[in-house]
Length: 224
Image (cartoon, rainbow, N blue to C red; front, side):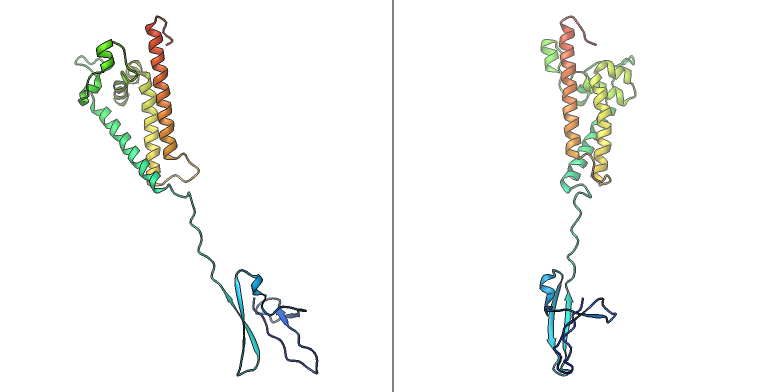
């Protein structure tokens, strides 16, 4: 809004100041006791009065400050750390399923194994089973995942039913983490940290429940 200077006095009348109602229309309304520099109350404009020596009339100029740059929208994309975490976890999941596909979970007669297929990866035999004859919490888990990847869900359930749930959840988690890594999902969505935490807690709970069931079944009453 521009500010007009004081008008010259006519026939001894006192000078009065005028403010335009709107820019470019030339309409003016007298303002009693108006301040010459009202821009101190405005946060977006700075007014300065300059006296024209040649023309002899006072003019007011208004300099409008440029608006501040817009703030970046937070949460529109996954953070850099989260994308790296999601990408690394997705690659690890793909590696696990690739190894499960490389394992052959059947014997020479075509019958599925119940455990021990992890030895095809060069890993040692289960120490708990070899020394005490007791199954460890992860016994049959590798075999179950491999059987399910090879398309044999019934044999996978018999080897270790936890592996069926972990494989299904792992496929879904790997796909979701892959999407997070490329920044496709927009908030609100499940973060990479929450996805990994939910998968770890769920897997640990399932393994614990199965191990308790095995111990109970060894005592003579099987719950499943």
